Amino acid sequence: MKTEDFKPEKKEGRYKSTYKPKEKRNENSFERRPKRDFEAKNSDFKRERTENSFRKRPKSEFDNNDYNFKKKPFENRQNRDEKREKGGVRLAKRLAELGVASRRDCEKIITDGKVKVNGIDTVDLSLLVTYDDEISVNGKALVNKKIETKIYLINKPSGYVTTNFDPQGRKTLFELVPAKFGRLMTIGRLDINTEGLILLTNNGEAARILELPSTGLKRVYRVRVFGEVKESEMESLKNGITIDGINYGKFVVLINEKKGANTWLTVIIHEGKNREIKKVLGHFNLKVTRLIRIQYGPYKLDDLPSGCIAESKFKFDISFYEKRNKRFNSKEPPSSKKISF
Image (cartoon, rainbow, N blue to C red; front, side, top):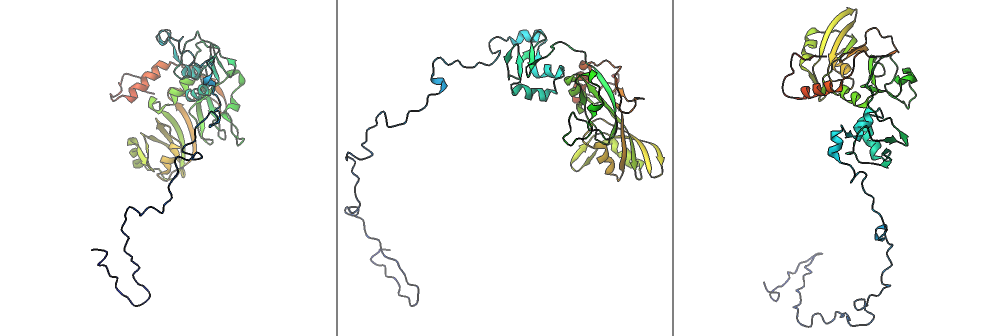
């Protein structure tokens, strides 16, 4: 439709058409617009740049030719193949073996720059060390030699927290450990109201592998419950159970004796998840009123008095548990000839 033929309709009332045809553009349409003077001396486009046009940027330390770049420690002097032949292991693993902390905590200590090897600061987690290297943590030299792994048994009373320090001021398990035993770490833990066997060791690597569920060590508990115990329900736990989206493994429940509304049970588990026994038995309306651990793998509580500590008679062999860990993780069924704890 041509603009010349457009005729707005006449409407009575408040609203009327406001359309106006656009003017045709021609060569003189933009004459009213002021032109820029690119050739003006004071124009920003013509200004010449000088040395003072920009502020002097501060020189970085890398601009100095005499600056010495920090090289990674042991970058050029460590031969990893020779270290492996001498039995070298990662630094975090060696610190854990020396009883500094768990392997994960040792990795944090290294990355925080608190470790020196042969007098040189290192944050390299892949660094291999042998017993010939000098290691210090927080300026304190460690005795870098192969130590005999020792396992201690302690009968934890009710009311003690399994930790080195409790911010709430409650009694801790290590208050029961004499200073002559040196620095020890727990293998697993028990709730504040749970009694019985806890293992302690001077070897962080031993603590790690013994508390792994994949190692398959059984935990035996004496449990007193309040409520009606049904054998059919206890039998169903042999295949495991899922509660609130959490899968619990094989449960073996043996009924020992009944005293009124209370029943004593023997429960055998292999994982040890948080409050596992209380949650599973509570699923069947059974309230746990007392919980005592009497065995952890080959280590048994026996007649150890409450609050006392004793060294285990078993000699710890970490290679046996490493093989056991691989066997439980493999798809092949375990051999019946091997020991089952």
